Length: 247
Image (cartoon, rainbow, N blue to C red; front, side, top):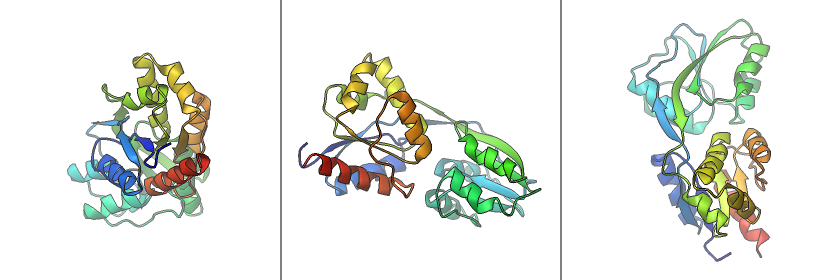
């Protein structure tokens, strides 16, 4: 590996991808931007009769803001700081952000207070069942609204070909769906097996245990799962591991 490792990043093609590329360059890496998620809005909005409303992404926050949604008297919960910042920037008051920025972390934060409460979960069509099941087990009445669908961009897959050719040093998967779409893109380009073989020499970092479990199911060995579920932590720890394993 050279002094500037080549790192694939799969964030949606908006400011999240731009910020990820900037960060990787600041950390001395050569980013390969290969978006694996594209947002397809449903034009739905969260219900207004809930005691709690949960938003799980920056995209969801932006969509409800654009639609002019109002939370009324509901307690507004954000799964992490990026979502909370997007809600705050749109003028919403965020009441709860869990210490652990995951579905299980949010369940742990709320489970002692939501017995009998009505909870609205507004998110993508690929949300983890952990959130819904955990809140229902805590005695809440849970309703889910799909704000948007996540689809794979037709042009994705350049990083998969690079992995197949041995030209990738690290990869940063930010969700289960990015890992699934990565291999779908590899298959669409006819290099799925070669890509999987190439990944054995790549430092693979993922956000969260659910993503790690998905990667394992797909045959991708995971090297890094940062304790903090943010892209900043993922990028830094993945690069640190990549450099350490090649010294």
